[in-house]
Length: 145
Image (cartoon, rainbow, N blue to C red; front, top):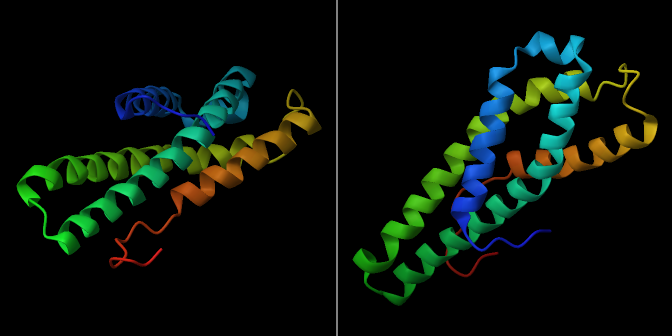
């Protein structure tokens, strides 16, 4: 798992590769080895980024609950947490919208340039991405993990 100094770094990266995937027509992933290679490189980055993002969303949600529980100044602490959560969920959902259909095409095992080892590695990464994309981000009550 990667460590990031700034969430902006992660958002910039997610925005960049999401935009890149969105600009490639879905049919290109069936027809073009170059498009499939782009997706495989994106999958490597997304594995770390999406898991990190979900983890950070949960931490921010816990922070909000703790702020309420301890009756701290909501004006001081809530806006950064709420902004981060909103921005993160939007980034995750936008990526998921283009990622899922492409994943089905590229990881179907029918593309000759993707050897068995690379396919297995990509499928393992896809498991982590799937978990992050399907994570329940409903805020949990204070003290519940």
